[in-house]
Length: 195
Image (cartoon, rainbow, N blue to C red; front, side, top):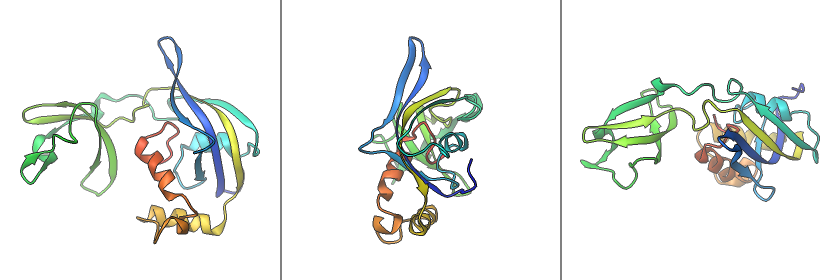
């Protein structure tokens, strides 16, 4: 990676994984809504950043990340059972949001936030899969670099503001478009924008 850890990079891409019938597209960031990040902040996988760091604006790219470079192996120990009461509001189970295949925000004792996938809702327990949706997969990216330049001080400060809990008064202070990155985080996208 180049010596400047704070590069503003915007890319459009398609992400594929190996399926039973060849490669299957699992995610797309179109040119109209590109994925953008500032390198060095951990919003994208390290290997993803490294592959793109020196690709000039306007160039196409195509590369793969091994599961070791991406989200590691699928780990059965990351499928846990939680007490049903955890998902209750005012003494009533949250049927609206807690159902099989739902992706739900969770928080551990240390205050760290993350997402889990509901596997099964039982009478007393709820089974939750905490593996990343792309754990165990080799990721194949194909796309185009729309921007690759040094990040401005304002963009860097906006990123710091977001990392410390908010935009600090509107998306303009985040460099414009803070909701876009957060939307990508909520989607749990393949290149690991927020992981």
